[in-house]
Image (cartoon, rainbow, N blue to C red):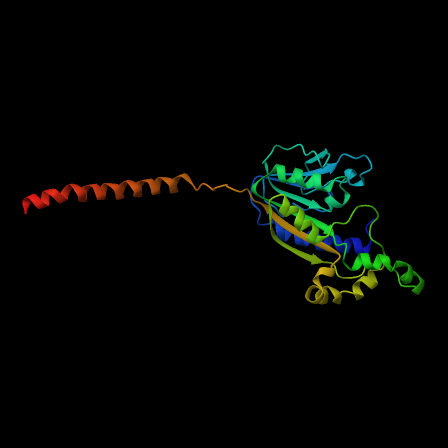
Length: 259
C-alpha cells in the first residue's frame, strides 16, 4: 500500500514522464522496472514493452501495467534486444536497484539506435529527503511524524549520472528536479507543505527529492541521409547546370566565326 509521500512522488513522476515521452517518435520503446509507473502510457510507438528484473525477490514482478501489457523478464545487465534496435528506454529508479548500474547503462547504450533517447528517474541523494533521514531521530523525539527513504539501493547523484552518460557518448538534453515537500506519513501534513513545491522550484531546485534526466545517443561520424526524392532533385539540378555550361562553351566559337 502506498503512503501519502509515495503517491505524491509517483504523481510527479507520472506527469513528468507524460511530458517527456509524448514527443519521442520511433517504433520500439522499453521501460525497465517499476510497472506501477506507466512510463510509456503517453507514447505513441507501436511496440512497447515493460522489462522486469529476473530476481525472484523483486516485488514488482507480480504487478502488471495496463497501458503496456507486454512484459519481458530478464537481467537488466543482459537485455534480450539486438544492438541498435530500440528508440526509447526509460529507467524509473532502475539504476538504484541494479546490481551493476554501470553495466545496465552500457546495455542501454548498446540497444539504443543512433539518436535514440534514454530517460532516467532517480532519488536525489543531496535533496531534502536524505537530510530528513539523517535528522530522523531528532524529529521522532520532537513528536513530528516522519518517513524515511525506502530501504535498499544506492542513490546516484544527478551530476554523477550526467558524467556517466557523457562517457558513454550521450548528449544531455535536459533535466529537472521535483518533490520539495518533506516525507511525512500524514496526508494532512503533506497538504500543509504544498507551498514548498513552488518555492523550492524557484529558490532551491537542486534540493528536490527526485530528478528526471533525459539524454540522446550520439554517434560520431554518422551522417543522416535525407529522403530519396531530395537526392533525385539535387541530381537533376546538377545535370541541368552542367548542360547549360556545355552549351555556352559550344556556342562560343561559332559566334566568333560568324563574327
